[in-house]
Amino acid sequence: TTLDFNAVLRDMGIQYRRHGRWNLSDDLQGRGYTAERTHVSYSLKGEKKVKVYMTWTMNGLKYLNAKLGYPNF
Image (cartoon, rainbow, N blue to C red; front, side):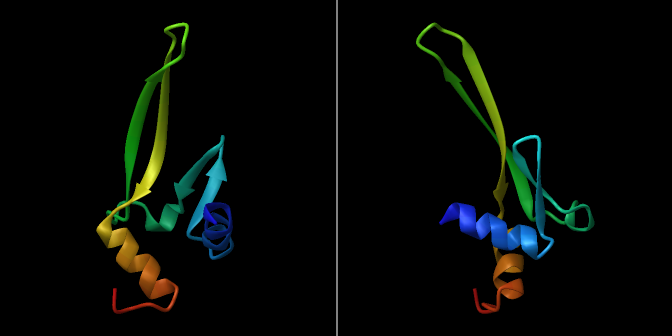
């Protein structure tokens, strides 16, 4: 599951969770492995809700596959 996969990446030191969000480890920042996405929605009362989350780029997926033993991605 997604929860299990995130736990594996946390245990490998690739990411960590802070304030309810997953973040890339400091030593991996700036390499283009992740990007931030923003999702905007509205409640039935018209209240705006903004959620920012991390997503993996193609470079990030290649890095993950190499770390997990799938280098021919």
